Amino acid sequence: EAGVVQSPRYKIIEKKQPVAFWCNPISGHNTLYWYRQNLGQGPELLIRYENEEAVDDSQLPKDRFSAERLKGVDSTLKIQPAELGDSAVYLCASSLERQFFASTDTQYFGPGTRLTVL
Amino acid sequence: AQSVTQLDSHVSVSEGTPVLLRCNYSSSYSPSLFWYVQHPNKGLQLLLKYTSAATLVKGINGFEAEFKKSETSFHLTKPSAHMSDAAEYFCVVSGSGGYQKVTFGIGTKLQVIP
Image (cartoon, rainbow over all chains, first blue to last red; front, side):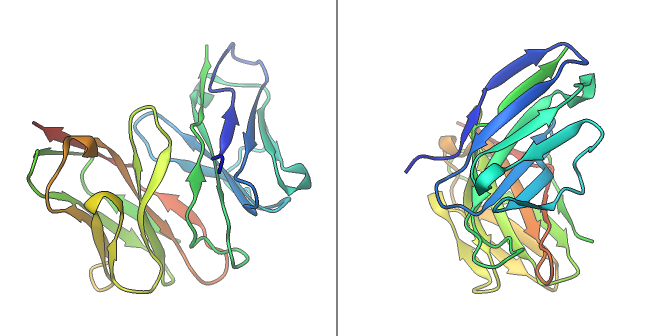
């Protein structure tokens, strides 16, 4: 079974440029998460999808960040424009939650996208 | 509101000696608790999880953790450290009842000395 796929693995951009990250979750997983992990910190949840619905985007900086999960499968996270402080690893995870809004099942993480903003 | 505190940012042990990584949590509801491991340049992987069943949870690679509600703790232990255990470990809490937010600790970096 293929794991969570993310691309690109690395991205270097100038500040004020746009950037997009793509995630393909494990087949059949209904829940998808985007996290940001700053150096020396734990992952911080940005947004969580249940199928195609964003059920928690309270930590997503909505002035510059956007996300979508069309058809409840693949997801894209976008930053426009990027700022120096956005340099981090962006992680995607998926899980098969048996209860709506639950977070009791294992999250499977992708390898992440390391973003460097110059 | 919920939070998780990993009490040590770095832990160093000799190979073959016990490992103890400490985690305390705060949650308004009965939480689910997890430990994830992150090896250098690899993705996060689940070690074990507690979801209101047995309070002593066994995970992969000989790790186990005990849920102690009275102490609001979920410490991770292993009887004998192996070189391959060197990694970063994250304690995670997910509150139950209503919407379950997921909160990661800041991580504990485990060093294993040969």
